[in-house]
Image (cartoon, rainbow, N blue to C red; front, side, top):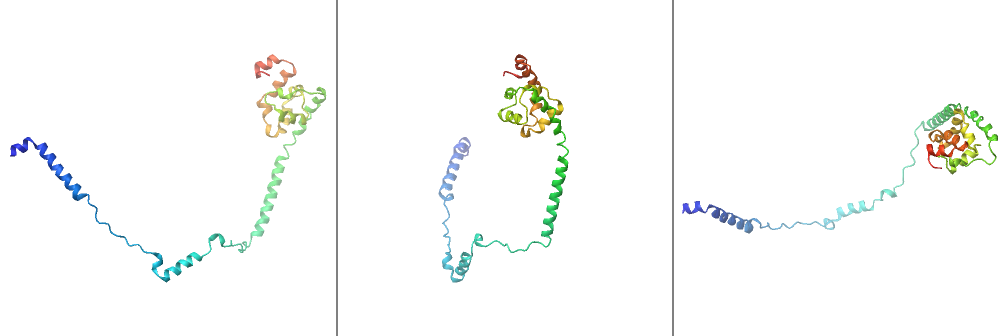
Length: 200
């Protein structure tokens, strides 16, 4: 018998495993009896807790509680408001004083203005300059700049004075090389213009 077990040990092992599997399926998978949970009904607790719950229910919601506005301001609040106004006024005066010296270059725009009478009465289409659109062309017209010749004759001081008046468009004349473009357009050098700045 021992020899038979040694020769068929795999089959014997499979039978033993099968027996354990069947035993586990029969007894091991049984679920324990369910324990009935006892549920408590709040209403069956009695009158005492019910009154407590009603007190919580009858409490007004937070939105219905009026905000506290009767708190008196701190003793020095009026004084501090006055100090704030004084500081604000002093800051405005400092800003005005710091900005006031800058308008001094504005008279430098006067050299650009004498060029205007020498220009033709009709003016040029300034929108041909790259970087000048309808709004900027209108703004330049309001500043008295109507021809390519005017822009071509700008000095550095003229350029700075006009640039200061361009608001949101400040920096465009230098960045887009208006003076150089205007010289080529005023001289009628279309080929030179297109070679450097692109098709008109």
